[in-house]
Length: 390
Image (cartoon, rainbow, N blue to C red; front, side):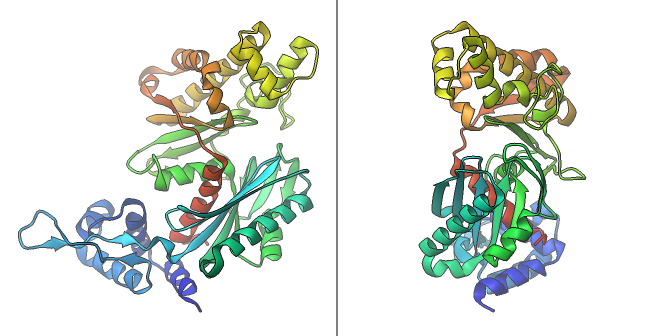
């Protein structure tokens, strides 16, 4: 067993307390043993016991300069993750391209690859994922020996425990055992996760979620997705579906969603729905770039369509906030670059429907590149390893 294999085995066999200590160092480090004890509620002796094998396995280092912890004569030796001890591959599957990254334990990118998809047929997508993984492995060179998992994210209803894509309207898939197929093809451990939930995991562990009790991510683009982080944990739901505001039935039943259901938010507010509505209004097929140009130039049809989309999204966010009570909603996705077309009506609808103190929830935008989505995939693999889920 190589060093990476030994490190993975150590984490897989770690107690709940040891896993929590490692997670604290990973997400909060550099951090002293005393601060870890405060965060976890463990005794300092228990922390020291948990840390020793992590240092021995090369996962944690205590080689930082000693600092005083406020108690005379007692220097604190901050602990930090040895980030490149393990490597993860994260892959985001879009309808028209594959984006892959290789990251270290902190999801810092070591290598990346993007390639177009000319079809959403399963065999085409699997071939592209294999090609991207091979490119990343070749780019990593000797560091590829430290790869311990590949994580793939897809839009839709994904059973992360079985690795089955139960339904993805964007990809046109139903009940696809993607993890099993890819594990056989790549000869590596493969995890499959919903893309927005993975993005939320990345923010939870390595972004805004560190030190934030509760937040939600809402993504606007081809689809309308959301992920929830409540009371320190990402909400997955009993069946792997939670926070799907894109499929709240908040619009007219004559609007048919790509998922096949009627009245979904996405049937009005997703990019394809917006493009189709403006195209109908002008009597010809338009591209998204043409629609955006029309809206920015004040075209009445385009402006009205974006206002309608913004209103239903704002209502959906208010519904989410009323139910889950996050302190912050982060709006991301490919359409966030044109948020000016949504903002006023979205915020107005949110203010109208948010109940009581829920209206104090902050709504901010945060652009996410597709590499960020792939980093989210890698983060989901990191979390599963640390929390003994692999």
